[in-house]
Image 1 (cartoon, one colour):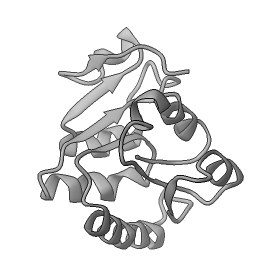
Image 2: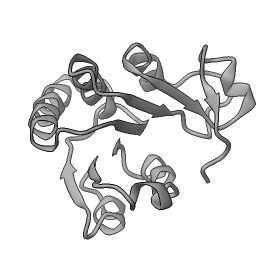
Image 3: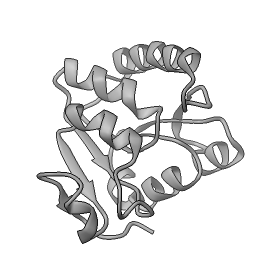
Length: 145
């Protein structure tokens, strides 16, 4: 499970009935909510900010290599944002399925991370019918929050 903290993390937390039944590792930012919501979970902390920050993109790519080699995931799931990209690229190279869940607050245009991750995404899930038009082949799963 790879996501930014805040709303991105909150949306993945709503999937607790699904992920709590699995051997799950998390990647998020070392913020107060990231630390408190994931207390007791296997968590790796990523570098931020990620927006237009090449240094942190490189650092998060190195983190992704380490985490992917150590964890050997069966699937990589994200709601974004920028931290997801290196994990999706590496997962695709390793033939590991990826699931991108577009955030609920972007109805009329695609998020930058979704656009960047889309070529590496196995399953694209959206929360609104309106989002389906933004992503060919996506599946509407309904609101997470």
